[in-house]
Length: 401
Image (cartoon, rainbow, N blue to C red; front, top):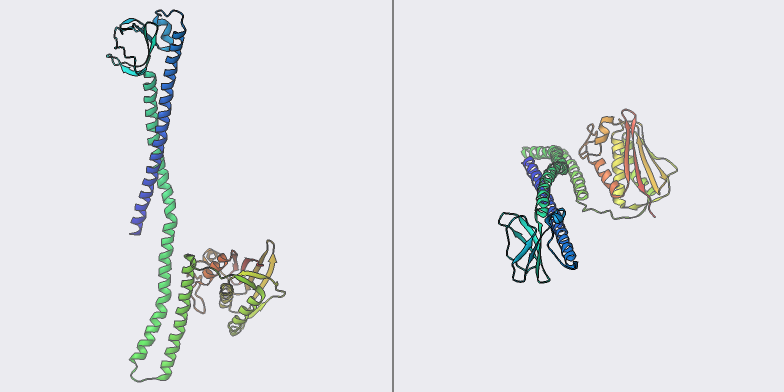
C-alpha cells in the first residue's frame, strides 16, 4: 500500500513539474512569437513609410519602373481622384478597389498573394504602396514550428528530470517510513517481553489455590520492577517523540558544569561499586558554566555514564573536562569496557540499536536521547572505541555566560 502511494505521488509530482513548466514555456514562447511578429510588421511598415516620404518629396511624381523597386519588393499604384488606376508596377493585371481608409491594410489578391498596403493622398489622387506579406508569414511560421518543437522537447526533458527529482524527493519519505516501521517493530519487541512476564506473574498469582505471601511478594516485586522498566521506556519514547515534533524546548538557564557532573557521578557510584569499578572525575575540572536545561544535561550525563558502567565488567570509568577554543567545553567519558566493533559505530546512535545485549537490560535509546539533547544544546558528540580496550565518548558544548 505504501509503495503504491509513493509511486502515485511520484507520478503526480512529475505531472505537476511538466504542467508548470509547459505553462511557463508556452507563455515565454507566445511572448517571443508576438515580439518577433510585431517587429517584422514594424519593419515592413517602416519600409513603406520611407517610400511614401520619398514620393512626397519628389517635385513632380511620375511613373517609375518596377525594376527600380525590386530590391525592396515594393509595388506602387497611382489612382486619380475618382479611384481609377492610372499606372502600376504590378506585373499582373489584378486591381483591388481603392479604399483610402484605414491607411494600412493587409489584403489578399484573387491569386492568393497577401500584401501589406498603405494608401496615402497625393497631388490629384492617391498613391498605394504594397509590400509582400510573406516576409512576415514565412519567418513567423518557421518560428512557430521551432518554438513548438522546442517547447515539446523541453517539456519532455523537464518530465524526465521531474521523474528523477521526484524520486529523490521520495527517498526521505521512504526512509522515514522504513524507520517508522523499524521503530514500531523495536518498540513492540521491547514492550512485549515485560508485558508477557507481568501477565504470567498475575495469572500465576490468580491461579494459586491458597495465598502464599512469600511467592506473591516475589511476583509483585517482579511486576513492580518491570513496571518501572516500562515507565522508563515510555518516558524515553515520549521524550524522543517530543524532540522529533519540536514540541520540547530546553528550559535554559546558566548552570555550573562542575557541580552538575559531581551530582551525576555520585548518583552512579552505587552502580559502579556494585561492579567493583573505579568511577571518578579527573582533576582539575574546569570551573565553567553552560547555558542549557539542567534536567536534560543531567539526563545526558546519566545516560552516558550508565552505558559506560553497564558495558565495563572491570576496570574504571573516568570523566574529564577541558575548555577548548571558540568558547566551548569538551567533556570526555572514558571506560575500559568491552568496546564497540568498528562496523557497529555508525549505528550506535540509532534508536533501539544495540551491538550486543545490555547486561542490565535496556531499551537501546540512551545514546539516541543523548544525541537529541546535545543537538538541542547546539553541541556535538563523538564516539571512539576499540573492542576489549574501551570506549571514549567526547561531548562538545558551547559555554554560557
